[in-house]
Length: 290
Image (cartoon, rainbow, N blue to C red; front, top):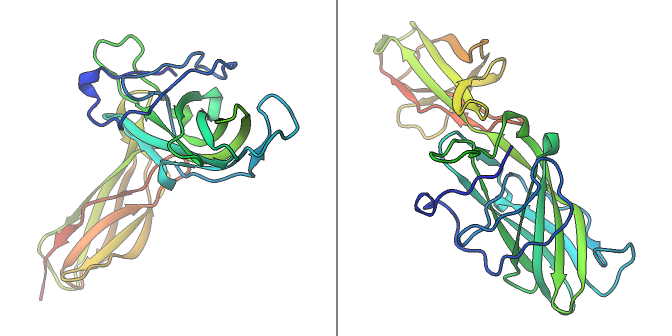
């Protein structure tokens, strides 16, 4: 797995600049051995749901507290999973919070994932108690790059966050495992309900396919053996109700039959897994006639 920096002309979806980025030289972990600063933002890699760990305090180099510096938690992507497909870069913030009597000044944030995945970036703190860094993730090849892809399928899953925070009076505090999150492969669902129209009381066949991003091939492929909900929304209604649950085939396909009772929309709904994001098909309308 490697890091990729998009050319400036291709970075419309990248977040605003992170002020005063610097490189803190610490031992590398996993497959990435250097950090890079990108035009206006630091591009590195990966993440989803933020979760605070116990607050850490004291100097980065020792085991005893020095001063009042505390790292109290971190939030990844505003508490959302980071879900990546095969086409676009995904940009997300990691905000580290804490306190010190002199105020926080700078944060270095490391992301650690399955199979030695490691990414890092840093930024000046925007307030005395909060420091936001920005990460950029991709799972698609970029023209003209020898090593363009950040992600492989093995990287999907739970990641952790380490933070090294400096204070205005020169202290530092290191907080390992201050947060965790999920980095997930994007999913897609299709649906087709037939026949249309249909006589009331007759049966309709609802088919579809669940596919998810393959970060090794840069394409979507069928997701086998997953439970997917068949849902119905009556004409004029606003809420879908689950009427059946079907397991995908070895190629990700879905098929079931249901009785046609009233006009409305049919769709498949996948709630997601630890490695794959959720997906909903666009409802397929069926006209039921007396």
